[in-house]
Image (cartoon, rainbow, N blue to C red; front, side, top):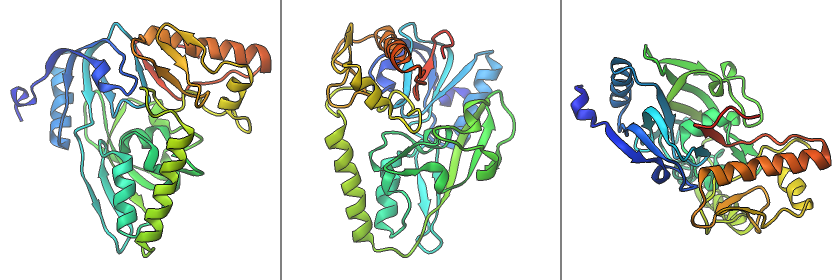
Length: 299
């Protein structure tokens, strides 16, 4: 595949690629639609000496207002999934939206993903983050991922027990690997109507307890188990606290919403304000679930 087919675009605002709707321009961006195009894009970055950042649905991402140098590889168009309703095995490309997959699994009578219907991310992002909700998480059902080194090379498979899964963690967060696809093994033979009911009730629980009208990234902080981040923040009276256009949601204290004109710096300052206040009061340092790109490394 020639790189002219890849159509790298220049200086595209990354705010369009994140659910917070903030972020400066990407020097270059490519949105591959197939695994071959992903591999070609990585080759293009290498051939042109460009560093490469990978983003999925942008739902767990804060990108600096100055944007990102080099190539941003957006996998949100790398979609598709094969379900086998007899074996319960699902093969899904990294950009496949998790809610779409959860609904398809329910329709096929496959039990295991009902918790995931309200997660606005992709299969690849869920594997990297060990995304979870409603008592379920990715690690419970993921069998393997296919990855490729970002600096180029052959793709290979990592099995679940090689991924070092923990709460909102996998070794993929530490390594320069791009997730191409994932394999899940669900429980076949369940009643699709019942699974759909469970899926829909999970979704309505999420939409009634979390702010869905303004741009956010979902939960900002990991829960410092057994404590809940949202409760610690709420007890400090921080709901409604603002920096610029960023606000701690009055619906759920672990959400920061963009009230319309927030910058990434506003949001980052609000994250740090919450960390400092909670630490002063409770001697607990909250750690963001959110991945921050373009910021100086922060705890």
